[in-house]
Length: 71
Image (cartoon, rainbow, N blue to C red; front, side, top):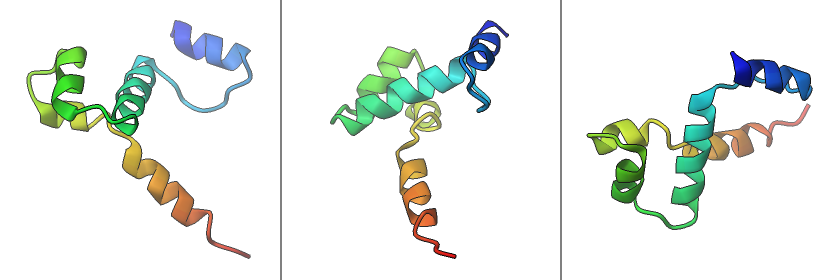
């Protein structure tokens, strides 16, 4: 709740949570050449599959493609 209040106070309208920070950290680490297994250890996940759920690298690719649509 605190994160959401602070986000609104900052003028952010995007839904944000502690998981958003975790996803950003894991994604940035992987974008900079980090290994999924190390990200898994840093996040304290038992499974690399769980850590992979926080990997948002493919989201950016999809967004880039959507932005190609011209009206």
